[in-house]
Each structure stands twice: as C-alpha cells, then as structure tokens.
Amino acid sequence: MREREMIRIHCSELGIADCDWVASGETPGDLVRDVVAHLGDDHGVDMPDAETILEGNYIEDPVMGDKDEGAAIIVRRLREALNIEPRVEGLDAPSVMAPPPQT
Image (cartoon, rainbow, N blue to C red; front, side, top):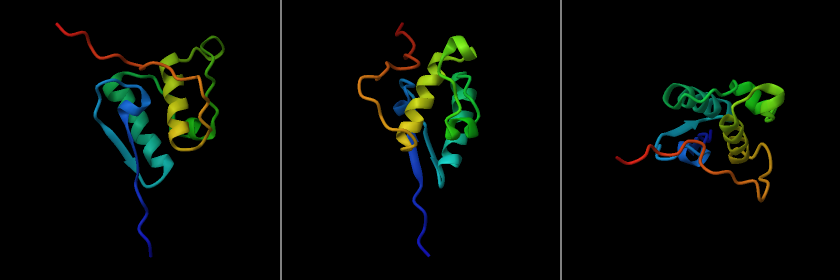
C-alpha cells in the first residue's frame, strides 16, 4: 500500500509576514484545521471553521457578514493553494499581517 503524501503550507504563503510555521496534514481537512488553530492562537486572526473554508461558504464581503478582511484573504489563498478554487490573476493582496516595526 502506498503511503499518502503530506500536504504542507507555510504560514507566510497565506500572508502572515515573518512566520516560519508550517502546517501539514494527510488531507486538506487536516491541514485547514491546523491552519485555523494556528492563525487564531498565534496571530489572533478570527478564521471561519475548517468545514466552512473547505465548502466555500465563507462570505468575503465585510459589510454583509462582518468578516475580517485579513481572514477573507487567507481563506482565498488557502483554497487556491489546495486547488479548491482557481487563482485569479490581479487579485494579489499584500501581507495580511505586517512584521512589527523595528525599534
């Protein structure tokens, strides 16, 4: 029986500057659950739950759903990285969280 390849994504790929944490999982669901927990615990990002992200039910309009714009960008990048939705050219957003200023 062939061993499953782990799916991996770096936090920095999702727009969190200067974070070297890497999520990994055997399935997209495993990976997304790790990402949601990490972003909430370590970066204070209010993310939707993994099932909402995977099903594509996250409303990106902050007016309609009172959603965090940074979370919407992360959800889109995560879904693109997992090939759940196609990448849209010209919609690249800057980092969600900039590194702290140097003192």
